[in-house]
Image (tube, rainbow, N blue to C red; front, side):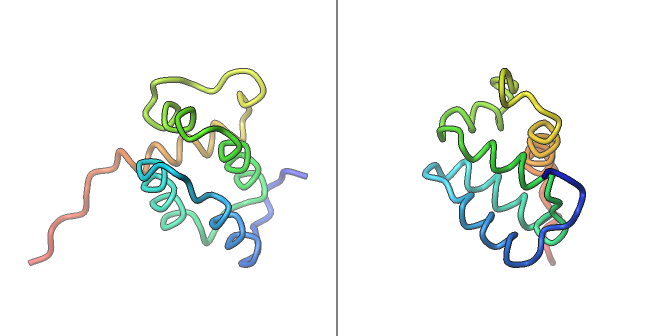
Length: 99
């Protein structure tokens, strides 16, 4: 049922809660992802993120840091799209300091 329909607010909140991780490094990527895309996540993106959240913390971190690329069952369009969004946000330059 992966499609481009937006998640409703309740589904997005549940996904955000489920995406909490044991490694702080992973949580930083995920928090930035939800801050940027959380209000406009699609069902397809939710499926990709859910697949990534099924990985161990270390395997997820390897993907986020580009030490590895998705292979096998997780080598899907949905996963690749979300992974690029997670990576892009983390590699963006920091905002300018105020004042």
